[in-house]
Length: 142
Ligand code: DQA
Image (cartoon, rainbow, N blue to C red; front, side, top):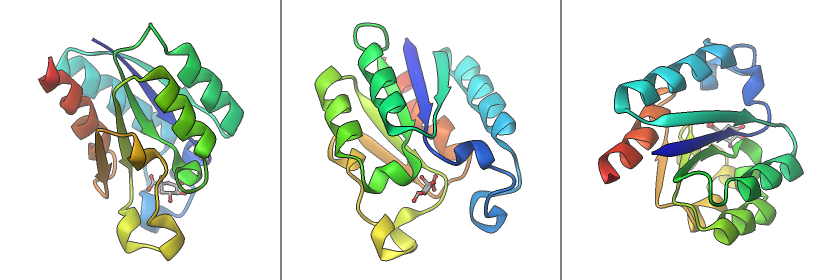
């Protein structure tokens, strides 16, 4: 099973960015964690990170016919991007949404997620472990 993991804007700044919220480990550590989790679960995984909404739309479109599932942390675009929601709807690839922090217990503007309207599952507030939970959702679906 082939899974595409997409990380949105500012996640490349992990370790530097608000460590009290997002933790002290950097983005390379997150990517290593995702790769090892996928391997343990017997999944093939590709990783993509971008700070640009249109690039994320492009990579979702390119996933059509190639990937069996998408794990996405849209970061700030979670709360603003109809374009990412529409791209996920367009390709119809089963999607799990992940957030490192618990977006429901932070500022009011973080409580609404466009991606949740299409995601089969949303995992919040588990830090890196949330990505393993998201991958396991696909591994156990097979
Ligand atoms: C985030 C939560 C978003 O509200 C925020 O804009 C992010 C990261 C998370 O992983 O907790 O950039 O998606």
